[in-house]
Image (cartoon, rainbow, N blue to C red; front, side, top):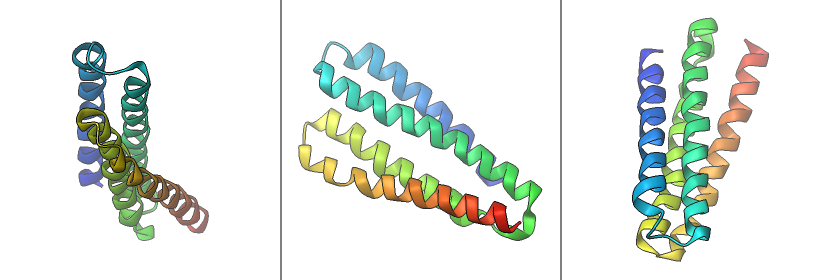
Length: 121
């Protein structure tokens, strides 16, 4: 449980840092379209950082349900989805956008697994 609290807090803090970086350092350097893409990465990172905190709560509430898979899927989703959007914006390499859907699938799988485990718990 503690690891998911730490992961959630770190990911939330990094989302705040990335948001500030985008708003201040990248605003003049990126097109409005790319800035919006960057902000999408930040938003989804924050959503799923909060999701990691929910995983920590779920681990406490239903300890026998083993929510680690949910946490790892959310963490993988953040890296793949948000990370690929950040990399795309910072490098301009558009092919990095092909990684983003894999992160989205991880997010969907995480929430489905969370629902399944809670329903069974």
